[in-house]
Length: 252
Image (cartoon, rainbow, N blue to C red; front, side, top):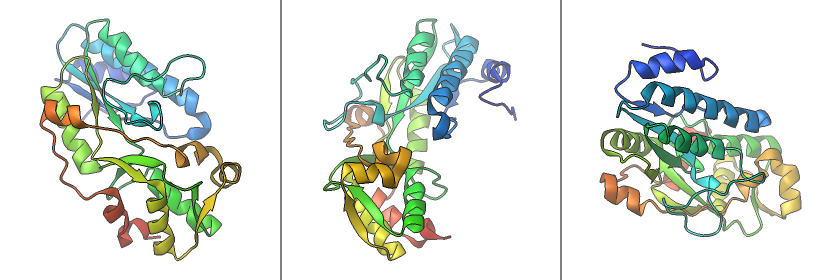
């Protein structure tokens, strides 16, 4: 076993140097320092790449479908907007491009806003916590903005396929469901917690959700058609709504 840290670049280099391939899924989920954490991820990817350059050993980098243009169906070929107004998480994909130019066999797996299932520590548990605290399960406007989603076990299968069969430079979408209306997520949370399900105007949502307001309003329909064809990936686990609608998600 090799223990390391995203801050310990030498440890990352030595671990990658001894590996047959690297799947990089770590990220520091402290959104009060989001930009700083994205730059930490950039440096980590560059360190991993420096140990793999010219070796033909694969590096799989994790990104997010939320980087892509909203309100249209995102496909694997779409590239996130860059520049001063871009979402800081683009750093991970920029780092992947940089290490590819140095001879690293790198590909990117983009994950959707919800990677759900037992052990979920992501956005859905955060929404449940907000609803408990504030006494309402909220959505923005008509709540028809869509979150792509995947079960964590299906996502794990995709990473293995990308490592074993992936193409250098490819972008893959770990998406089992193209788009689940946010209102449907709020409805399950409200029913399970026995709290009202309410619509909020954007200005109200900013106060209610705080830093999470952007994600609550995110319209992120995403296709994985090419990923499924290229890697023969077939998600088999429950979808987000039936998975969420279980006591386990609401165990205090």
